[in-house]
Amino acid sequence: MLIALIVAQFFLPEKNDSPREDQHILVAEQVPDHIKTTLTNACLDCHSNQTNYLWYHKIAPVSWVINNHIVEGKEHLNLSEWGQQDVFDKIGTLEEMVEEVEDGEMPLKEYTWLHPKAKLSEKQIAELKEWSEQLSEELILKSE
Image 1: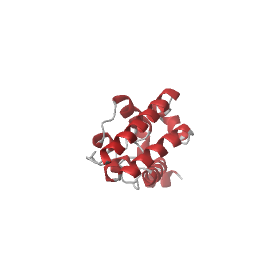
Image 2: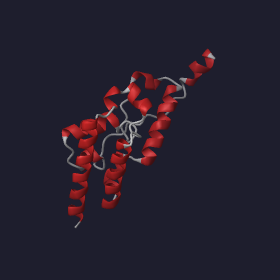
Image 3: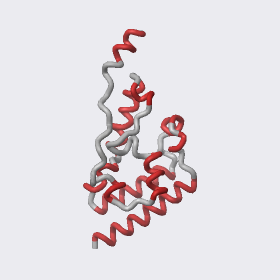
Image 4: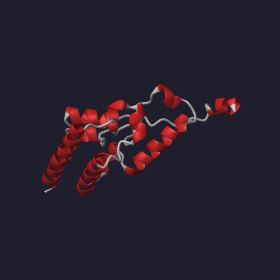
């Protein structure tokens, strides 16, 4: 068992750490600092091309589980590709983000256990909702 664990350390998944580009939501949109903080703490590790890796992310099999969460998260929503979406997809994305957070589906409970800053307060959820509604309105106005 110990040998298998040692050998597993040589088969770590590729890191999710591309440079932030113009398509990223934090670059493409004017995001208030408090929303940037919320997105960074609760969303971007699994829903962007930039994961903030901690020491335990480098240990198999934990690294495989985390990589799986990242891959699945990016399949549903990748905020690094925000600028590639059309206006209606962006609005839908914002609505879905708020719905998932309000329903307690996101961030994942197991993520908040290890990342206490990711646990969103009612105030943060309300702020995220208000910001997403504001941004949706701005996107519609820009598209006209």
